View (tube, rainbow, N blue to C red):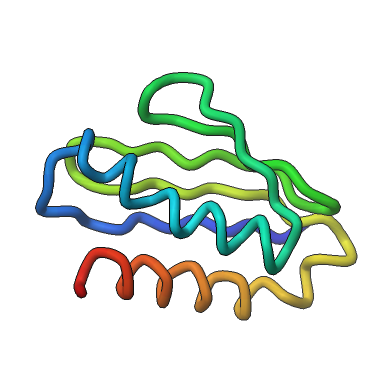
Length: 93
């Protein structure tokens, strides 16, 4: 089983990050049908067809972990690249 494990450093307050990271979550939902449910103010569960994981907004950055099922495993590098690009677009703009 393939896994995605991304740590994205932040230089802003995590409360600001939650509002901003919504763009990433919306893009994942639209492109890959990955749904998110916030379980705390700064952590959400990610679920979709062949994907289960978490996104946590910490003081030092954003932690994204996801397990990819058999059919999603070939798209691992594409999904990782898209997540990082969206984070860069969101936080470096």
